[in-house]
Amino acid sequence: MQTASTIARLTLLAVGVAGALAAADANAAAFQLKENSAKGLGRAFAGSTSTEGDASVIATNPASMRLLDGTLVQGDVSAISFGAKFRGQGQYGNGAPISGGNGGDAGMIAPVPAAYFHLPFGEKENMHFGASLTVPFGFKTEYDRDWVGRYNGVKTELQAIDLGVAFSYDVNPYLSFGASVFAERLNVDLTSAVDTGTAINASAQQKAAAAVLAAGGTPAQALAASRQAAAALAQQGFAPGTADGFLRIKGDEVSVGYTLGMTVTPVEGTNIAFSYRSKVEHKITDGKADFTIPQNAAAFLAAAAPGTFIDSNGRATITLPASATVGFTHRVNDQWQIMAEVTRTAWSKFDQVTVDYDSNQPDSVLPFHYRDTTFASIGTDFRVNDKLTLRGGLAYDQTPTTDAHRDVRVPDTTRKWLSLGLTYAASDKMEYSVGYTHLFTKDPNITSTSVTGNTVTGKYKVSGDVLAASMQYKF
Image (cartoon, rainbow, N blue to C red; front, top):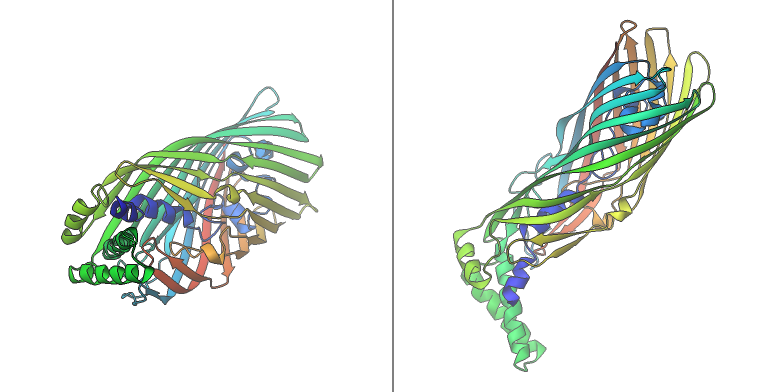
């Protein structure tokens, strides 16, 4: 049925999954999070895989566990403050303006926790066991429910939580290899408005025009029939913006990934680390789609396109990208260390997602056109005395999106980092660290069109700050 096929393009799962995957985190490329360590944050994560004394290597490069001092536990929490204020306008597919405001500040302040445990063992303590709890991907934005871009997205919440175990082996004091395996739980929760007035009206226009052409009519006659159908449906209450519904999608899934690492110390005081984090494929088989549709629209759809815009289960495969990192740390003298790090993330593999529905909607192919990204940073530590160490760093963090594909759910843009931090050793066993990063961004432009042809155009004022604290205790 042509009507059902047209309306099927507006399904909740298509809109919801597309919105979630277009979302981007304020502090790493797309919705990737680097915030797993206060020490690392304080130097813009320069040398985060190659520097001694930071247990976050258990998750990022297990081979560097030989740089940790004995049995220890470490807990970190980062507070991410992200602001996204939109200025612009929206219009329906027929050119009429969309009512509503700019949505308020869509950003948030959210905590990101991390925890680690390290245990050396073996006759020479040249083997290491580690456990970690991290959040490598995540984001949340939420606009006012009646804002001008409501058809493109209202709420976006995505989070991946990793629980991992790691092992490493020191071949000698200069070479070590490590690996970890982690279980990753992905949670997605999304909402947006649905313009069922446009969906029903546009479908009627297409059907009327197709009937005229099938009967041998001219394009001009088909256009006239289309306009008559549009006017008739508008009189019934089905025109752009006159029969708005609301949708919500929730889904979760657990999959397994791994990290491999190698750390080389060519000369004492200099470490070079190589690490690789695998992609993680999440096959969501029990996603829940909940529609709230006006009564008149629900009755029309039940007759014209049965099985559409109804509560349904759905399936989609979401693959979080692989990344490769090279880290470098060099001790200049007893007080100074310098660090650098480069990470390449394979976002280009994240090109499209296919959604399969349990209801009558046909499969949808959702294009993203992401590009591979580079994160590069430099940093330094200055040891003031036995108790106090100061640090700082700079970073360049490339976005995988482009102006042509930026989405309102998060106005992602390339960022530059300025980071500062310190560590205070309260005793031989206990130390505390804090880190702070300010993000410098350009205000990104956006032109985004929903599946019903409604367009939102404007500019964002984007801001970002991160504050982290940690505690490390050595047994």
